[in-house]
Image (cartoon, rainbow, N blue to C red; front, side, top):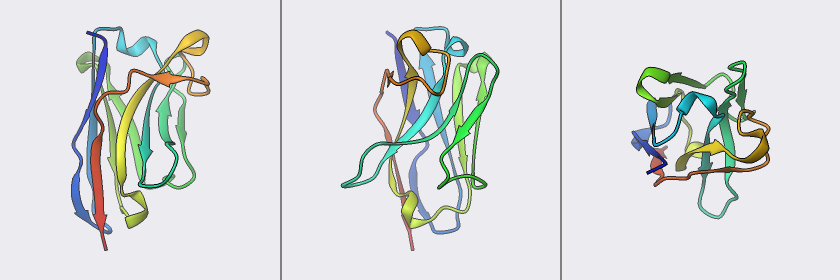
Length: 125
């Protein structure tokens, strides 16, 4: 099966850290732009970070710049998101998704998919 599966979420105090993992299976992982997204209660899904497959360029949302780091291990078909200095605003379900369609290699692709079950991150004050 073609899928992405996020894991590593949990409950952490503000200022703490977590590292999320996204395991890919059923497709050539490093051919695609893969990104981290999150959805907080009552809010739209937000693109948090992404790695393009062509040149490895990285995107971060302004809200996480300087605190989150995205990196991948292509040998393990796994994408990671190191999250430091977490705040209550980071509380959300985090998902990983792959770029689809014509621009499957780019973080600017208009469509992402292959959403797996997300992982809950809860930051307490």
